[in-house]
Amino acid sequence: MSTPLHSQTELMEKRANVIEQARELLNRAKGEDRDLHADEKEQYERMMEDVASLKERADREFQIGKIEAEIASETREAPKTEQRKSDLLYTVSATAVDPFGSTEYRSAFNTFLRTNDRTEIRALEQGVTSEGGALVPTPLSDQIYGIAAQGMSIYGLATKVQTDSGNFDLARVATSGTAYAGSNEETNLSSLGADPAFGTYALSCNNRKASHYVVVSTELLQDSKFGLEDFIAQHGGNAMAEVDEMEYVNGGGTNGPTGFLSDATVAFTTSAAFTYANLMSLKYGVRQGWRRKGTWVMNDASLSQVLVLTDSASHLIFRPSPVAGGDDNLIGSPVRTSFAMANDASGGKPVAFGDWSNYVIVEKPLTISRSDHVLFATDQTAFRLTRRRDGRLAQDGAVKVISRTS
Image 1 (cartoon, rainbow, N blue to C red):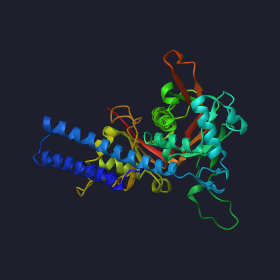
Image 2: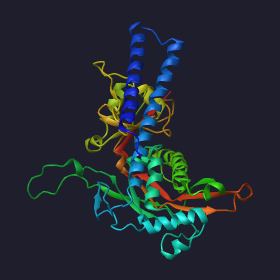
Image 3: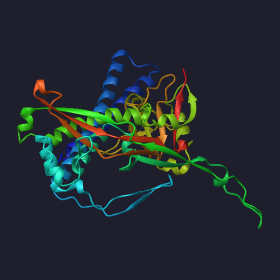
């Protein structure tokens, strides 16, 4: 049963009230021309913790409600063949038939999970990997990624490309030249301006994999009422979020995803990132086309500073989302939080803004393997979720950051 909408709304209303109380607390100290007292600082910090906690609770309930509704629907309509185009100079095609969403495959997969018997999957001539595992059925894969999305921001904002080969050439404009500016010429004269130079980033999922382990006791496996897939989805999704968000932001090392901070343009360097003027400069320093689709990304500690900032007319520049699952708003654009972003301290890049569809993630289908031997002594079974993926920001100017000095 999905979570009642009124409970989600109540959580978001309570969050908005806490933000208003925090603003009143700061205004009272400001009106008396003083800093917060020790007890007021503790109160303010508790308020900021409540703001983050209430949003997480509402979003979790919103997400689980969506997942429950999808699971309750026994039939999945096969998507029509369609093409999705972007300004990255490539096209992604969706397949019309999904064999891994069929009832037959899901039944065979469940047998494999509970008994380690691959006979049914082999009989379908699909889904068995070279490493002895199995491809995760589409509904379970969607559930895992849905749970993971609650703990990471970049994945939900990025462009995703799934490939069987694991290789993908990401087209990009290496240098814009002057041709985009346009020019007026006399008849019969050559066009002025230099053409843009195009290049590619070679992305590959084949050189590195990320694995997450979920351990289940034999007693639970033998209990037909135990929701094994839900258990794997919850624990696997949470583990996935911890690893992926860090790598999509800061990088995954050799052969891993290139974190966006490596390629994003530094708009400017300052000793105080979170001022109204600096945030305005960052946003309006991004080209208009990307700015219109822009989203802010920062961590929770940074967001707590932004919550109480005001513009020149003393109006709050932050607007909390009135609904669960919705984005908060900062200076007219959505804002997401990421634990992988740096704090507002010397040497860090605490805030980013831009069009995140320019961060491209290439991935192969999610697989799962089972071992009854690794934890034999404790009578437990280990499941290993394995993913191969790569990622990089195609256009460095599409996302910009503020860099902090001391």
